[in-house]
Image (cartoon, rainbow, N blue to C red; front, side, top):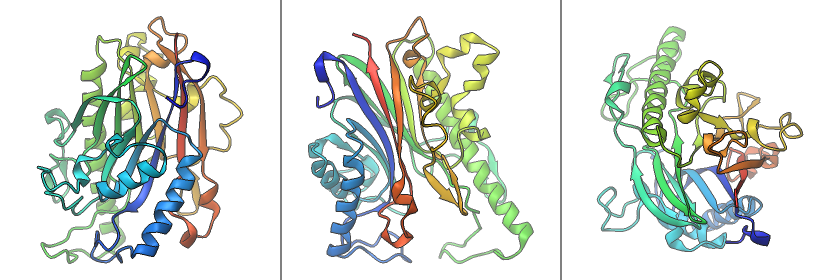
Length: 340
């Protein structure tokens, strides 16, 4: 491994929203122009330049339409094509999910990993106890963008990595089968109700992910990392619903299943905290791309298997003109050291 220097067992893990990364000459949204060959090469080269700076061994990605594109990015970063895992954007004709057509209707999440893959699964259905009725729609039973769970072997230590891309805060207006609007987008009361629908969807997704995390962590000593585009800030209700970090203040036994914001528990915390942001929403910088770790990466835990040495944000490109950006999200990366 490239980051196993001087005998230390360490690795970098990062998350990046790739902003509709698709194969050239492929229509992904009806109202969005396909990348021609030149635009695709520009996108691939730009993403490579950004991600190369992170030197990550594991990269969680969001908004990818085609596995071929992701594999090309992986190779350009020094990985092998098989290091890229993205079932719901597969260009393999044998895929039971896509029949080789890539992602349909909405982009997919994926993971690129240098480490051996021990287990891969998708969280497609909302857990029964997390299903709620969305106003004017009914029970929300399936993830719009199913999270990906990849269990890897990092220097002999199995680690479960989950990447997610939760429902955005963008108002969800009702449409007919042809995609035509059924509501007045300019009516402020309708707009509030449409945003309420999005919140309900994101809450159900967060709760369902939480239940999957509990199942993985409860009464085990195997670490877990959750990262991705959570579409809300770290302290939001939906993000905390997934992590339950605050519960530890009242019940120490909750450490077993809680997750901790890597940026807040990093060994070098302090010098980065005032410059962190990964997205600019309505003119305001915010951190909606996040990285959480389980108790096994808390240095003061009796079950500690390692620690987060530092967390870095790569966001200078967000200051560029929008037309010059290959992605509208920053990259967050954590350096994790495993105990010898």
